[in-house]
Length: 301
Image: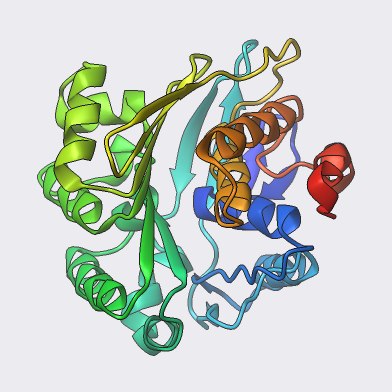
């Protein structure tokens, strides 16, 4: 996606891309390969996207380029508290047609990388057709049967959904998830249940290995596969500029530690730290130099 901000600048971003990019930065020294799967066009913006992703160390071999499509766009407005609102222009974006135009690209990953992780979000599901979602759920079930693990972030944008398909799609995704990142407000909207207990009970029902419940400024909750709950607070951030990618950055920080077998507490604290750094700057993807101190943690560069 291409971001259009109120300041007249445009930047590259998108929820799964934000997480992939920050994860690539934070794990560059640990030989963790981060690949991104999507479609772009052959226009200037698309070529700039690919060049930027490669520069960040993201593996783009699963990215396809479609002659008659372009990247989607969204305009972001932020208020004085750093909270954001979106206007989308993505009905004909290339990403919507990734599975229908070139399913073999993703199939290569599913069949060739048993033991790896596949990360998707609620937005990933929202922008594709119902038929493509069904195909993806079947492919992910096969992927898990071959030893792969699924990471799901519930990112929910009502404007992107046919309301009659929301609940069944999220239930199917949670049934496949090994690790789930759930924003509490999104869960309340999806399930029409504004209780934290409801989120916890659903996580137990689906038997995820780990469920991370993000609660804005409040401490996040993490549930492990044995039902143990962890509550991890973040450090207070005084200068909040843009919360656009807070959850995406948290997920990247958390995974950068957890996939290296560090503890839940250590991983969540680092996730908070990464998110806290990102929201002090404008745009979903901040300059690499603005998070240089994070690369110094445990020798990451």
